[in-house]
Image (tube, rainbow, N blue to C red; front, top):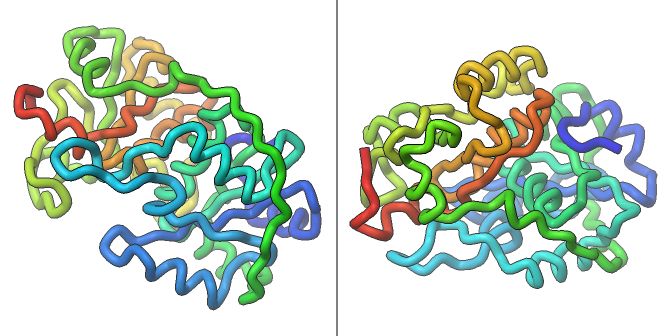
Length: 279
């Protein structure tokens, strides 16, 4: 079973395996349908497409929710079933942004108890660079029965975060770019800044200059330094809307530090209440 990262070579070796499912999560926030159109032109053989807005989130309510609210468990179960995922299936997910969006689907599957899911290291760019096969043929999976075993403790909301602002055992990690953390160049949300006490931990720093993931040793050293002895299981990751935060959760998991928690609403949810403090 693969449950964190997987190489393109191993993915290619399993392309004909009926108990594997390949899911393309390419997405651009500023052009929501662009990557679906690119997928229809070229993708991994047997891959299906997961749209961040439509499949990995539900519509947000301006001023009341974050930009990418999690769907209900029932909605996700229906979606995963339609994609042909049950307990026998190994899932491999990829995108073209270092795992930024694929990590959300990785997290959602594991949140509902499906551990056999891995993000393809290097994603689409590495797949192309290494000369692996592509196709324009659209694959329609046979539906299966996805059975959820939700891990409710992996999710926190704004009140949980607020209640732990002074708790030294809870390390809060901000996966957005360092400038947005500092309150600079904020183009997505109406209020800039960060949650008080959070550490700037841009998800891009989990990757090397080639866009591949850093080694387990490098990641572990980085996150142990950030946590300063506080347990990874109590750490909370957030970003702008609960997408790239999952990248940091994957990084810690891949480094052998166990599972940490997601504030799915993230910054765009935090700022819907003017009483919540901002730095």
